[in-house]
Length: 120
Image 1 (cartoon, rainbow, N blue to C red):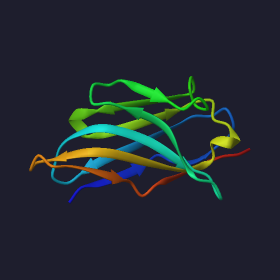
Image 2: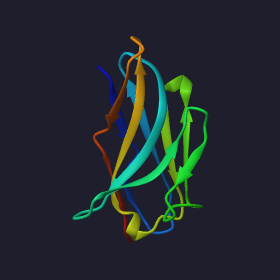
Image 3: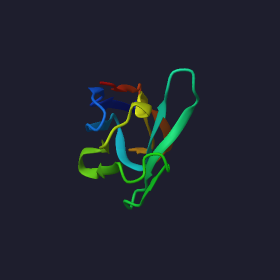
């Protein structure tokens, strides 16, 4: 059984920073592609950033230059560093990853989400 667990959300003032973590646990061999998504109240879930197994990254235009996605393969953890936060960044943030388990099977998983609120 594989689980993705996000942490690091919270309340922050505009202009502030947060770092989200997504830790994979269970019978894991490795994480291949991983990404962060967010969903604001009453809106659809949108893609925010992605990172390949080789470390190549991509970002939505709305967060480019402010957010940084990274990974620690030894810890099976993916991070999202969020700087210069704006009220419109307020959302539940979800981690998504393709995980290769010890039986060499790949499946896609979602985390449970972590709330980020940007407000003064």
